[in-house]
Structure formats: structure tokens, C-alpha cells
Image (cartoon, rainbow, N blue to C red):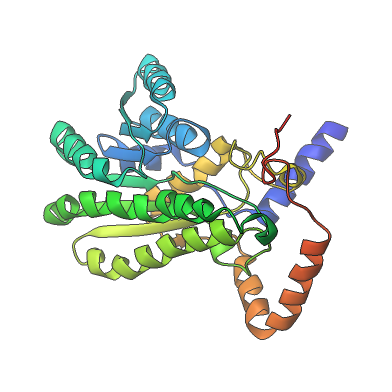
Length: 298
């Protein structure tokens, strides 16, 4: 009885916090079967879960990430289930390598139908700890903004020439709600890419390319793990979150957000002083994690 009550409570919380996910497997197969799908950040978490789901439904998955061994394991697992996947180890912050990487993938597979921009880096660190860490900013800009831009600059000309394609961007609700203390570097870099992608969306739409952005809530992954407080917040597993990616592919929606983002934006617009005051209280009653302080995490 207690277990059923817990499950029911979790379902209610999930519906209140997260955007609805898509589980229509037949629709997903129609959308991706035979399509070539590039997934960045494919070695762990959401990227891995998405790659596996798409391959099970007939997509040809091009898995990109820095860790070659993990990609090889992913490809082997997908092939063992009868799917098709190819590993392309790459560091998207190495800008000079991205153009040749895209050319190689296009040459070997005849083009790319869908790009899942999932790779990213998170950071929660207060200003007090950043005065001597300008490299935090350059590293985050390279991974969350310039790397994805460079990749799309290499892929989009071929998509536009063919007259079809889709970009699915895995973003964060952090770029849509009032910015929180300690999250400035992460939110600003994710926001920069979000604005750039929204800006070019009308330009590439006329060439048959759709842009879908998912403003994700918390996902329990390696990226969120260093912040212990997040483990106490409602969130999704990587597999559950992949349902939002498949929803974006099936429906080709312009954006996917939880229902409460719009009220949060409105509150910030009409009562920014109160929001800032509240964020100050939050900052004073929280602290940097051991990871943010550069200490060993047990």
C-alpha cells in the first residue's frame, strides 16, 4: 500500500514539475526509422539514453563524445540489440577538429537528418570563488556555446542544400527563469546558444529545417551529481528525460517547457525587486559544494 501511494505521489510531482513526455513508439519509429541522427554527449546520461532509444526505433545513430571507450561500449550494446550506431570520438571544444569531423560523418552516411545538441557542461560556483578562475568562463563558453555553434556551422549547409532536417537543442529552464545565485556561468553560456539558435531558426525554416528546444528541468546524471542538494529535488532519470527528446522529434515543436515557466517569467517581469531579494536569501542560506571549492568529493 505504501509503495503504491509513493508511486502515485511521484507521478503527481512529475506532472507538476516536468513537461509531458512522449511514449508513442509507433510515431517515433515513423519519425526516425532510416534517418541519420547525430547525438552529442552520447557517452553518458541523457545522450546515451537517447542514442539507445533512437537506435531501437530504427535510427542510424552517430554518437559523438570525448570518451572513446564509452562510445565503443554504447555502439556494441546498440548493435547487440540489432540497431545501427557509429562512434565518433571528439572534443567539441577543439574547434579546428569539428569541420573535418562533420565532413567525415556526412561523407560516410550521405548526410545528417537530425542533430541532438546534448553535450554540455554544468557549474555551480559563487563569485567569491571565481576571481582567480577566468578559465571557468572560457571553458564553459567553449563547451556550451561556441562548440555547438561550430558544429552546426559545419552541418547546416548540407542540410539546407537537401532542404530538410531538424535541430533538437537540449537546453535548461535556467535560461527561461530568473537567474539563480552561483549559476551565472552555466546559465549565461546556455543562454547565449539558445538566443543564437532562436535567431537563426527563421532563416533555416525556409529551407525545411525545424528547430526544437527543450528547456529541461533537473535530470539525475553525473552532471548534477556534484551538487548534493539537487538529489533532494524532484527530477527525472536520463531514460525519462529522453522521452522529451523523442517528443521533440515526433512533434517538431518549437519549444518544450514545463507549464510553470511562464508564470515564473511573469513574476520576474513584474516583481524583479522581490525576486532579487528572494535570491539573496537563497544565496545566504546555501553554500558552495566541495566540488566547487576544489575539494575531493567522496
